[in-house]
Length: 204
Image (cartoon, rainbow, N blue to C red):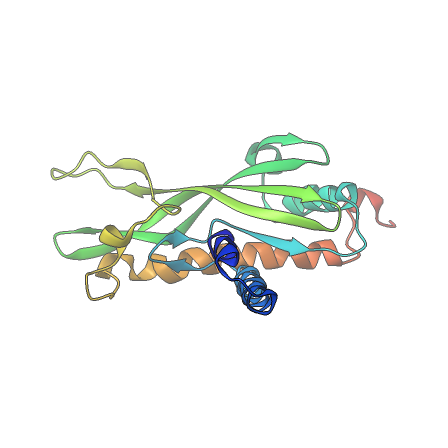
């Protein structure tokens, strides 16, 4: 949108300037509206998504995030990599099936590690996937081990063929990665909007 606004100076009439400004704002609105969920395309995974939580302070949202972590992960103390109260929390998690690897024409499901960060402000929070790793079994063809899976840069040559089709080994990742983090975010949002409280505060 900033690029479009630069062209406003080239138009002599206020009418044309106003028309172009309206178009620019509309494009910006549509773009923002589309980033409510993660998706995977030729530029990789959506950088981050912002979710509105009307009428809740950042302190209330932050506490809900902490409680959600405690109810979602088996060992919440170990998954919290860092945090600043009422500002953000960074989470390290493990799962499987987000990515695959191939050996001699056979495709195997990978184990995965991931890191994401939840930042909070009054009335909203940001869900930012920072890193995904996948594990490749060692073999005589490869030393294997954990490696970073590129998600936030232009991976056109790696993920997609020249005709636009997804390369075979990445077909699972293209769907599985955004679906996984969209489900996590939905779980978090549902928890924030619920009246759920920690067990220590429930009647007993």
